[in-house]
Image (cartoon, rainbow, N blue to C red; front, side, top):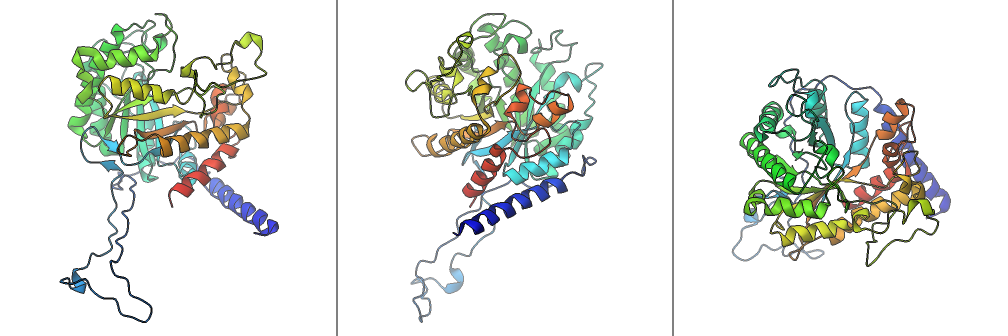
Length: 447
């Protein structure tokens, strides 16, 4: 193609994107009416003729079959899920973590569609909804989030964290699983199939997410909570996917800090002779990334950072939990513990860039162009290589962290916060290179 035409085509593509972004600036609208739109689906392959006509010749019907009996093309879509339990996706799905509370929600959802994501993940704090007394629910902005997401034809994953203080003074896991069971049942009765998936807790192997202390025995407490929530959700909405919460990817062990994720996974799966096995659809996982390309993995294929300063040690390159491909280790744990028939859902992944937050200095080694390349390489790795012996995906969905946190942190006066550096939108809503690369990649695989 003539280089001038190529440049003009790129300019027109960006102009179309920018016009759509600007058109989405109308602000968050009121809660929409319930929608009956189905979960996005994949079309079936069209039926091919068995005996196509040759040039200048009429088509011949197959012996014994009248022309009217021939299979007719159908517009009926094929579900993205396979039949049976646990629920499994036919192909890996792609979503993004967004913050939809008290922001220009319709703009975020418009950008979600423009990028090509079919799922979004919103985390909610249970303590902000139930209270001031037990059993009183103030759903508030969540009504609008659920309705607007459904109206945008985007699947919604809800992640639930933080117990009300009257159930746990430190907002960790509730002492009685039935307390959270009551909450998730009320949520599903209110929203039903508008919620496509529910993730029960988040990084529960960290002491800060578990009331200030965590041990191997706490994995059993978590299983009891998951079983209760699974039963209550499925009784109301059988098609909603229930995810076992994602442990933080860490090899560090100290009761007041964390339990290594491998110990936590194995303790969950072995508790009460595998009680968990019939009480979750997929395992949520948060693979690390640090500044390591997605094709690397310690110890066999480690990354090297030549300019790593001594005060940062190895710059997060000397443990498999710092690598995206730690997913392969988690898959191995699951197979060895007898839950390999369940898919993994990556509910957070991504790469930070330059930021000002202590502990996230690895982002200072990742440029915008590298972030873009790493994200696409990770998507390709999952889609093309993470399949089982039957060629079926063992990663059901993956959610990029994140869409719009740079906009939010800019509003707080700190656009260089680490959460902002993970974002694929800039502080002024402009698309970063990673946004444009994702848009191109997802469009190519949907053909």
